Image (cartoon, rainbow, N blue to C red; front, side, top):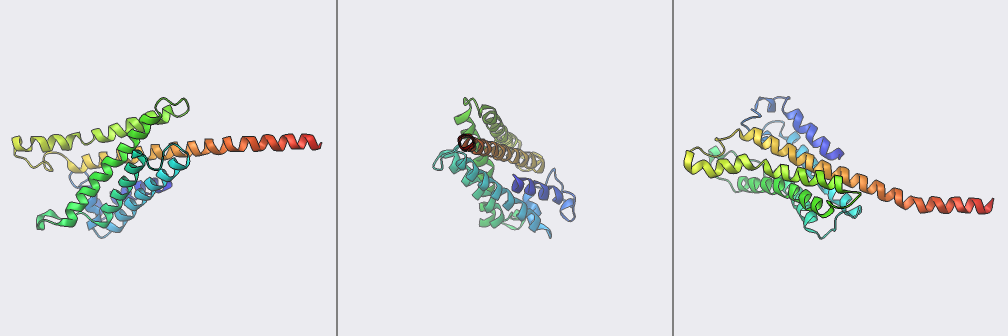
Length: 223
């Protein structure tokens, strides 16, 4: 959770610290921060988010909420790898021509933004009827669905491009849509991390109860 919050704080700083503050948050995508002088802050933030997603996966498996070979585990791992790929293959300036690493950057971004909410949806569905975790499952499932719905403006812009003749990335405030999508992804992973923390705390407390009872019984016997 700390790693995820750190990533959010660093990205927030880029919106107010020059030269990144000069980019329009409505029209310019978040990835463009990586091309500026303080782009290392962006890279650090995304890697922190990737580390947070990976730690969440480990915590969920440790709490036995998630099987290591499950589809949800795979989606979380792929999502974290997608975030790392965004840093390894930075955004390309398409005005100067095509680029393979630019295409990889796009794919990595799409993979991360789809895989992470998909993992939340799969996990939420699996535990939605459990008496202890159904509330956490509800939030994970709802936030995962909400995140995927944030793709709707992009999908509509792509589908209507042949009709309007306007390139899809110009037909909508792409920067604002991407920031909304990114915020939803972060909220989803945070919900999973909080769920994992609660589950691990519950498991620890349950494991300590028999030990405490044994010690109490022994003390009484000795007395």
